Image (cartoon, rainbow, N blue to C red; front, side):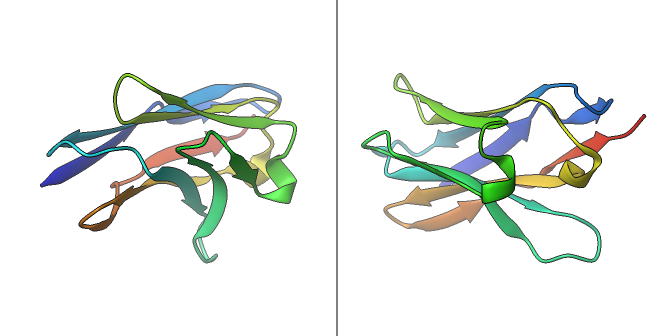
Length: 115
């Protein structure tokens, strides 16, 4: 069994920064890919950023240049550095982990951007 846990959310003023962390623990597996999604009230869940074992990354257009996804090679952890946050970034952020036994969602962490 693989467990996924996010951390690092919170309340931040516009222009501020947050760093989200995601850890996949439990049954060991080789890293394939991990991603961050977000869902704002009244909106569908959307892909924010993803990273593959090769190191290649993809970003939603509206976060390019502001967000950066990275991973720890020592274990199955992924991070999302979010800079220059705007109110439209307010959402629950979910980690999504690709494993050999199926893909797993974390429970999410709330990010609120407000003055």
